[in-house]
Length: 132
Image (cartoon, rainbow, N blue to C red; front, top):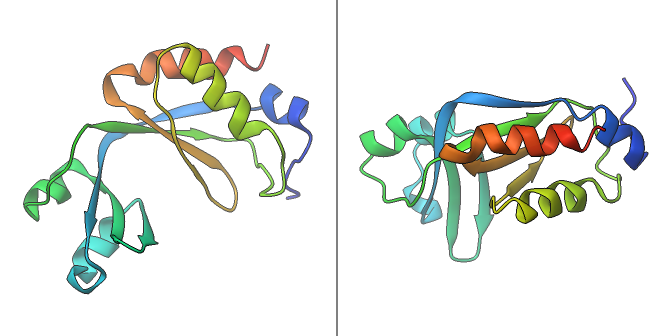
C-alpha cells in the first residue's frame, strides 16, 4: 500500500471515524512511567518537561493522574504519507473555523485528531465536508 501525498486525493478520501473511547492527556516525569501505563497508552511523546501520555479515562483515573478535558480520537482512514503537504493545515483550519480545538497526531499510516469529546460529532461533519 502506497501512502498518498496529493492533497486533493487525501481530502476526498479522508473518511474520518471517531473512536467510542474517551481519552485524556496527562504528563509524568520519565522515571515515573510504568509498563502498565505504557501498555494502555494510545500515544506518548517525550518532552524536556516530562512525558505526555494519551490515556483512556479509566486508566488515568485508576493511576490517580491529573488531567484537563476529555477527548475523542478521530482517525482519518486515508493512508496519508508523512511527506504530504497541507492535510493537517486543511483539517485544523476547518475545525478551527467551527470552534473545535484539534490535537493532531501523525502516525505511519493515518492521521489522528483528538477533539473535545462533546464536539466529536460536529468535528466528523466538518472533516467530512472537506471531501466535497
